[in-house]
Image (tube, rainbow, N blue to C red; front, side, top):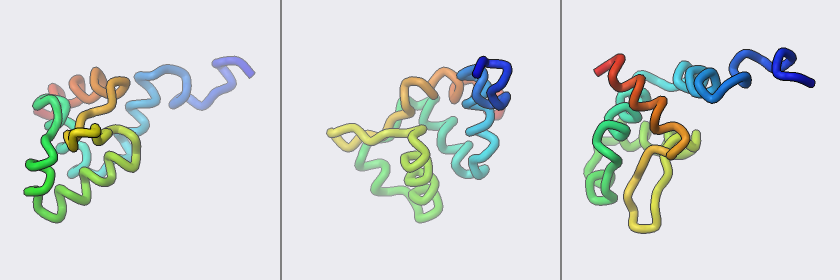
Length: 92
């Protein structure tokens, strides 16, 4: 099975991220873009999020786009960061 046989979303990292981005809710997109711009979110900041934002953060963690570090900080996964930054500039 060669690259031509793969679905378009699996042919490049950019295509995979674009496909993942299209599956996110508007709230998840906004939060991911914000986290990419700000360099993450401390555990204290995460604890102060309203219910909707906390749900979006949890969704991003479950989708492996954001990870929680041992210190409690939430950061955009390194592989997704350049793509999230590009999208932040497009919607920012």
